[in-house]
Image (cartoon, rainbow, N blue to C red; front, top):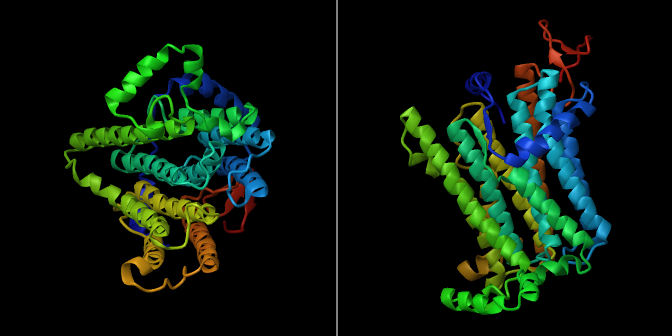
Amino acid sequence: MRITKKQLAGLDQYKYSGVDKSVLSKHVLGPFWTWLVTLFPKTLAPNTITFLGLCFVITNVGTLLYFDIGYEGKVLPSWVYLSWAIGLFAYQSMDAIDGKQARRTGMASALGEMFDHGCDAINTTLEVILCAHALGLNRSWWTVASQAASLCNFYASTWEEYHTGTLYLSAFSGPVEGILMICVIYLITAFHPSGPGFWSTPILTPLIKAFPQSLDLIYQINETLGLKGYWKLDKLPANVAFMTFGAVGTVGNIVTSYSNVIQARLKAGKPILSPLLGYLPFFTHTLILVTWLHAELRGGVSLVHDARLLPFIGYWGMAFSYQVSQLILAHVTKSPFPFWNGMMVYSLFGMLDANSLWWFGREPLVQASPVAANVFISMSFFVALFNYIRFAREVIWQITEHTGIACFTVRHKDANGQWVQNGVPDKKAQ
């Protein structure tokens, strides 16, 4: 991908703006992060810190694959869940201090925000995979719903930043409180005797055991609200309750994001409805992918309730990372909103092929059998992965050449166009 001269001119005008309303971040984690960054040498680039944080999460996924590569829901050793909590907290900490390190080293730039957001996008899907396993959801539509809701949250925040020019973190935000909540889930799963099975028990069981008389009130609420099945308050599993909480949070984030966009647009004298079109790429791609998964209900090869779900979620995550990174690039370069990309076309082909027997009365071309589906879904993941790596590499190279600020080393270009590190000229190009 080539960044145009007009986009580079927009890049020169970029200035980071952020609002963090988190009390926890301000009074608890903030001082910790301020201390933590001092442990890192000024010779370490901020983007390197971000990537090292992501490596913790990638290692966590590696332990999952080692013990349960089929994503069957096997109970893992307690230390694995504990390591997930440590890895995610380490990622959050390094993600929080990369900006502080950038200011310490004089390397703050638009590339830093792009790289940070790109790692966050990848981490979102990886944590969906890990958290769904810890909650005992695994191969289920709940995992699919969790992926869709988590990515929607991320997309809404990025969409909001594109239209307002400011990254807003509310009093309860995903990068702060949301991550800590997931860490707690991992810790409970690690130390509770039932492991992931704990999350399948009704969430109100402790309350009912402590106060048996509360059952009458719970039954009345069930009857008043017309709750049935496991949606009854006395039957509602803890993992389903957590998914419901996530869904409510997603809707709340969309409403809050749009509220901030309305304020910014009114202040600038711009229309307030047209930004909503920016949700079309995300919801269109999500609909395509869910319809692809839905093929198993119409006689197609099983994806949701099979080991294929894991590489499919991986494909979804990498395709989303590509989509949202294009949006971030448009934000920092002041470019038009990106409404489509090539991975959407690829997903459309996969969806049409998976549903071809139901819709067109013919066998799928590349997903006609379980073996063929295995090959195609796995290949799709690597296609999305290499496409994202290609995009990231090209964007990083062009931005570093233009700004004269390196990506993974503490270097900059001097007046002669040479890369300089620690006062030593380096004539090699980035």
